[in-house]
Length: 197
Ligand SMILES: [Zn+2]
Image (cartoon, rainbow, N blue to C red):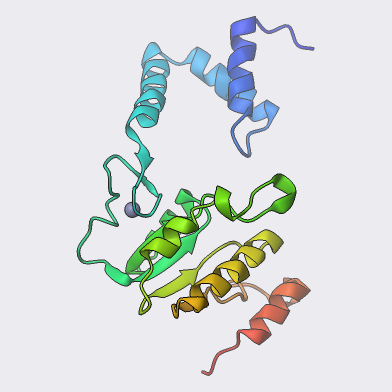
């Protein structure tokens, strides 16, 4: 047990709750706040409170927004015939960084995981089915995990019943990667998803 004052310990505890932040890093962050001028503490706490009060879920795609509809859903230049289904709001920004995808998104809010009590009703699946039209393409971009794959197949069955074209991201080799270091599952999927040159 360390002998930090309670208030310092409390801040270390809070920083430790962030993903990827261990106790040691949390301690460095807390000391950084302590040693900085008051502006940092004020700006940081204000930013967090403002974020929490202003950001809400877009009513159409369940991504994050400061308005009823997010900037993507309210942009008339986006291709509304293609909907990319992702697990979490943050995934949208991974696609947006590339500027290649011009369609809309739909955030599930997780993946099917019966062991954790997450079934279809806990995800934004009903709202997805309500917004897709028969001529749409739905690109399922769940993660390449067991739950992500199961969720993808579940959605594909539901959507194909509605005559929606369902696609998913190709699984394959990382750019700049060396074949020697790629795991077997990725090699198998890369062979399955091979394309003509
Ligand atoms: Zn939206």
